[in-house]
Length: 219
Image (cartoon, rainbow, N blue to C red):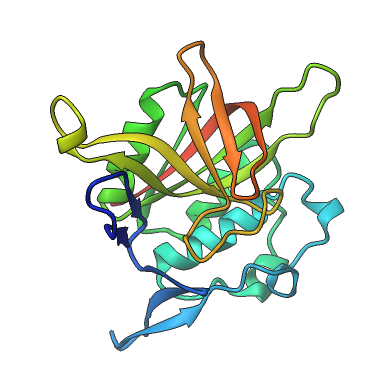
């Protein structure tokens, strides 16, 4: 889904198959090949584990992202029978490989500014990504959380020297503010000094590190 309503400014490029019309829908395909739309339930009723079992929200991100990429709801029964994908990126990748066997899953650590271009290319090719976000705070330590990278914000070529340039990543996550119909709950922009500035839709902002990335690409 591309949000191109304001062609003179930035554009939002989303994962394929997502639709935002007050609620989140995604395209599904039956075994016979018939396509339709289903509601992406992002609430606690569609979540198989208690928060204390999955404190970083990795399972939440896995289920939402895999449902959209697999074009069918991920079975709650199946997930309840599987180990909780903990904050370890290897465990998250393993859970995704089990649910999405036809996709290539790649884990990377300490991604920098090039992450925006990588995510833009992955989403453009029909894939997706989730990442582990660690907030930086001078006075207290805030537990990390996993986020689902649903899209990128792009400056059109008319505003850049050369080609369209992705400038921010669009995030949703169990620990972030609920996403609006615009399709994201927070925006992450790389800082020249290193790290990321995350701005939520409710006006809060903080510095963060994206310590690992799990990239999901069509095989």
